[in-house]
Image (cartoon, rainbow, N blue to C red):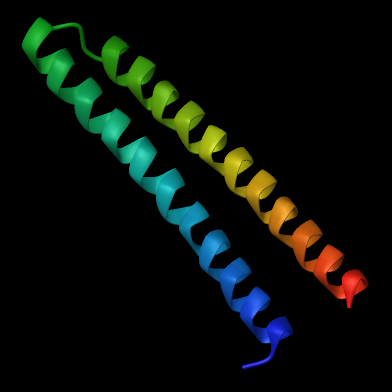
Length: 83
């Protein structure tokens, strides 16, 4: 497999996890919020707060993945120029 194809596959692998982490982070926040609201009887406040926390965590992961992808692209470009 060529180096270009390898870097493309690596990039697709990293970026394909972005959508999943956004969904999972939000779903985990929703689940925790619902359970705490049921336990404390504060519906819908804790659900809203924890969904917001889940969204923040998902976007944080998005920025981490984008930064990692940019770093991988820069490293690939540096390897091309070194040859």
